[in-house]
Length: 107
Image (cartoon, rainbow, N blue to C red; front, side, top):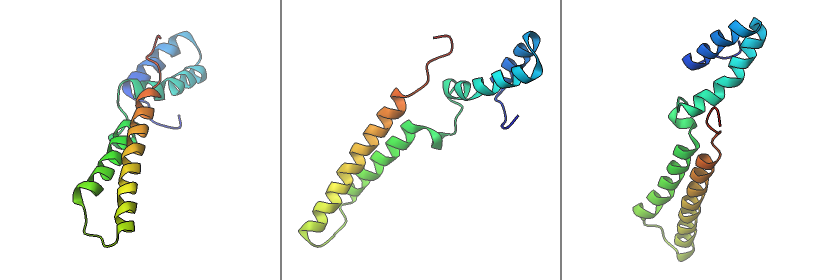
């Protein structure tokens, strides 16, 4: 098997082995594994698109909150524009992460 199965996928493997050959059972478990990881929220926090979107938003907000003393009106406009773009991008990425989740098993 190319990657480690989570415990729930190992249970799928054991059940599938009772009804089919080993190779097919392994393929079923491998196909089920990423869905089970997603559905049971077992992915590492840094791979969560929702968390990534929130971090992008936080970086954009921090740029505004810090209000670093930068000379020149154009520079301030650029920094504010960058911060707004980061915030907007973070919101869009978080929405994408939430809306692109895989359907629950059995649905």
